[in-house]
Image (tube, rainbow, N blue to C red; front, top):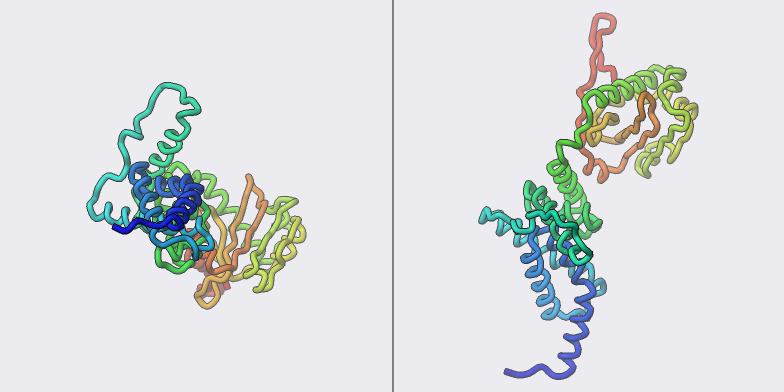
Length: 311
């Protein structure tokens, strides 16, 4: 067997030193994806072997490259595990102790937290799990995640949104009574807006209410920001005829549809019986991340026939 020369050994040592600076992050990613510190170590070691074979001379962003490699390795493990229907979590890490943990136990506790998260994430498909963990836990941009899971950035956003809905605990569900009260408040706001009842709008809005719009909504004709009850009431008065009530991420808001196409989402923040903020979202990619439940158009009798009240 031909031995590597001194230069090759030095290159490997330098590469190994660079890799070690990224190891804690890579291990954290792999542990949260796989739910097993042992499997995480194996995934990280495999990433090192791939780096050592490929070399790092042409890699501009080593941290990003390694995160991609580890994530793909973990995705392959998750898919294989799903096929075998194996239990992914190291059971011994779920055992608890009555002793107060010391500083030396910090790493074990961090791993146990990751395992607890993995128990919740077991409800997800392998791709949902990878997208959710990378974005919501490690703030990896959807553009980078898309390349890892072979999806478009828009599709990655949709996958993350679906995953959030699946892992969201039932305890987080809004109180039905509070939700009904919010619906009445939002409904009254749009009814007053459509009919130009300025004083009613002023009564429903908090004095310091703020309306913010994203760039896409601004392009459709609204202001980036409007502050104060009177300014907001005057802007909405006589408008919003086509708005339809909708639940937006399980709180009440509204949507504007044009030609069957979603154009703007109105997300409301309310406190007690007042509206304190309204967010106008026109960006289609953001729409894809929202959990929307649009109410059917309300119909009412008028002069012997029925008409759609949203027009």
